[in-house]
Image (cartoon, rainbow, N blue to C red; front, side, top):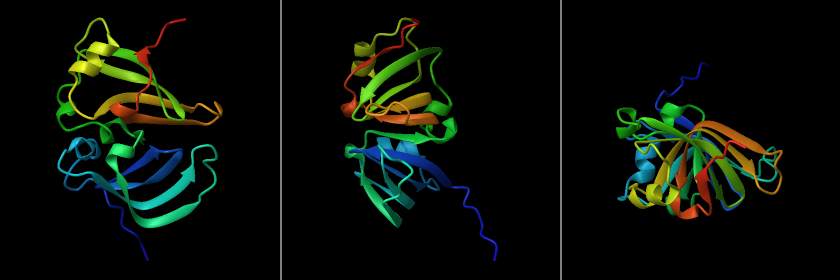
Length: 173
């Protein structure tokens, strides 16, 4: 029997509290990034969710047909394709200047690209003036702080701004 592929499902990895949940998000009504930014709901449903510890990603500790995650507890969400990880409004206006940035989150150091209208990047100004609880980064590499050989990569990431500890532009040295 053939299985049909649901084109509205986005494959994503959700990171929080030292765990990774890999699964699918149903984007039939709203994009993943738009749902993360939506203040009218605190939760996201993940379809076909696989749970694994960040420190040992090859070990699957559980599988659920459907799981719910509290958005405020997420550290970040990583998507394979950039288009799956950006908000609807960002499809039309991403900013003119690309900055290579670096930040730290619980369990991770993250590098990626940030598109803004700023010609000179100032992390404090960016965090103070950018609306929303999640920030969009492109071409993301997330390296586990406790084991740098564990690396996750994706086309886009939605980063929970309340989980950011250090944030700056990547130096060229």
